[in-house]
Image 1: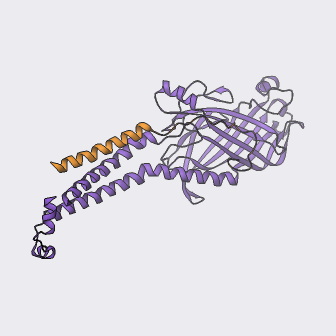
Image 2 (image 1 turned 45 degrees about the vertical axis):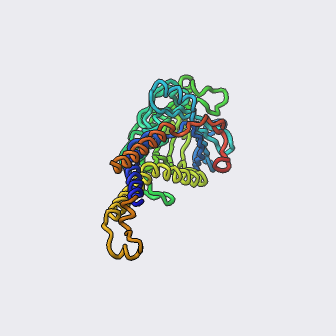
Image 3 (image 1 turned 30 degrees about the vertical axis):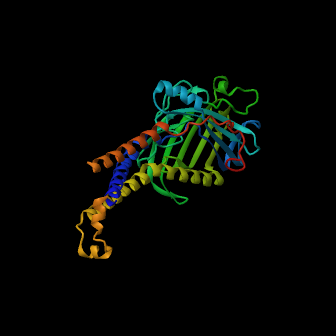
Length: 339
Length: 46
């Protein structure tokens, strides 16, 4: 009986010992990926911001609040189509950054299509990749860092300039009880395309530069607090400045008009929600990557120890005490050997 | 001989289990019917 039990324990020990590395190095790289059907929204706010009033002489005004609603929606059908030609797991995100003024009316709107590798977050170039209708070829990351983010600089895509530049790793931080990595990117003053949707009556924003000579300039300091396990930002802030230069702005002091200036921060309820979401996903990733393999390895050792211990006991010769206890001439060892 | 059989069955079970898990994979789901938002929701998910 003991010998049979020790064989079962040996089988369990090998099962656990084999499963641990298989989970970590075979299953994890195949299973850890961004689901293609993700839907997520986040609300950001810039309080006490400066915003151009397009309907009142194009003058910059101080406003209580500018709101940015960012929605992200995975297109499963599009990802399947691209996967068929790319030969790897692909995610297609359609996003919309909708900017709302203090009166609740639209200030601008920028749609994007972002296509990337579901496992590594490397960009995948396919038809449809765009920012505000302009075809782009992204380099680096956008919105999310790779799983197990490293404490180093990354190349980060800026949608306004349609270019990528380094986002610098500044150091570790604690955000709402989570240990995160803090990154910063500064985009210097750059001429950017006019958003295709702006509330300027009688003027097509796409031809504004050609017809009036007015150009839009932009600079930003982007800040991200990133959970290193999932690579998901738990908080994001941006100090943004936009100026109209030349054309109708030439008559203004300094020859420029502030179109927007403000410190954009995640609304508090969305910040809490994001932290909870990332914390939950972090546990799932760690379960597959660390907890299960480590637990199985430890379990394998325990089962192996038990199997050896039982085997050793079954081989121990019977002593006089045992015979006396049983009263039938059979010791503990005899039982094991007869099994 | 029997310890080898036990060890081999443990190994085979582990390999089969991992192959089954990875072959099954995570469900892909469908594209969300929810629209891209143009108003600020009062609270997350609302």
